[in-house]
Each structure stands twice: as C-alpha cells, then as structure tokens.
Length: 97
Image (cartoon, rainbow, N blue to C red; front, side, top):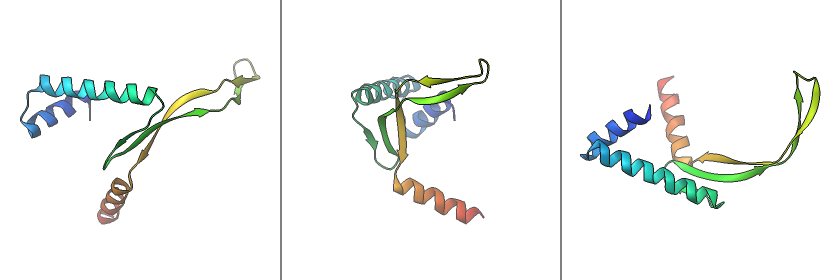
C-alpha cells in the first residue's frame, strides 16, 4: 500500500478530507521521528514498538578493492511487532492453509 492509498483509505473510513489526513499523517511521523531521535522508543498498541540501538563496528569485505575494512558503529531503528498482531497473522496464515 502506498502513502496515497493509505491517505485515501483513512479519509474514507474516518470521513475526513484527504488534506486533513495527509497533514495528520505527516505530523504523526514527524513526532515519531523526534521521539526516536531522543533514543526513546515509540510503542503503538496493537502494532509494535520502534526503538534505536547502536550496531557495533564490524569487519566487511570490499570485493572491488579486495580488502577488508572496518565499518564504524552506527545507530539504527529496530521494529518489534506486538504479540497480538503476531498471533493474528499466525492464525490467518494457518486458516488459509
């Protein structure tokens, strides 16, 4: 589902204009980015949790130069889905088989 499809679907379900939904979605994402940037996790009930963590430095092979190099540590975002959505997806998969 694309961003525009999400906006259209939310607009029809909530009875709001697409402009309002787009503004709400943009500000929600902006707030989530700010919270995640402060190294605080964002938990959305029924969906999951977004958290940041630091990947340690590691060795990697560059096939072009045929040399090993050390990649520096970096901060990444990790998403962990909630148990309720995991169980729901598991149930629908078993039901379809």
